[in-house]
Length: 131
Image (cartoon, rainbow, N blue to C red; front, side):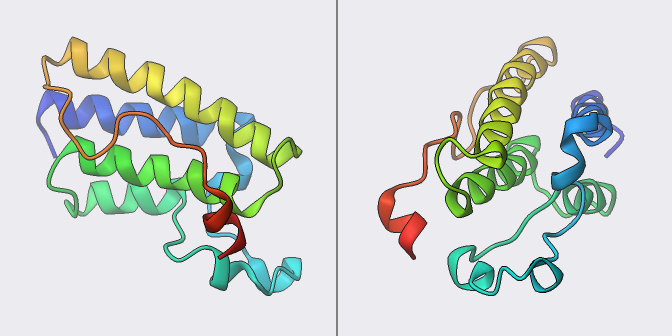
């Protein structure tokens, strides 16, 4: 993880982790203590910024695109579970837009091809929200 692109990605994730409004995204959702007993049925692959940082530090991602997709999953999970227009939904939507802007700049600065599985966060479908 010592290449310049990984260093830049690590810095980007750390910047998001450090944001005051990223607090709900730093650790796994504690759905039991929050009484969100349907959370495991709705969210099939939980993800948080702490786990992305850990996975990056342990070299578990094949590319920065793979790491970016897990960051995108954080926002998508939040937007899937929470009602459109709710505070958490809007927070995740805002974080997603900021991340995409900064990640695109990182790719350009590091001369990394766009690639990856996804470039923009898609709004969760009604089926995903009901799942």
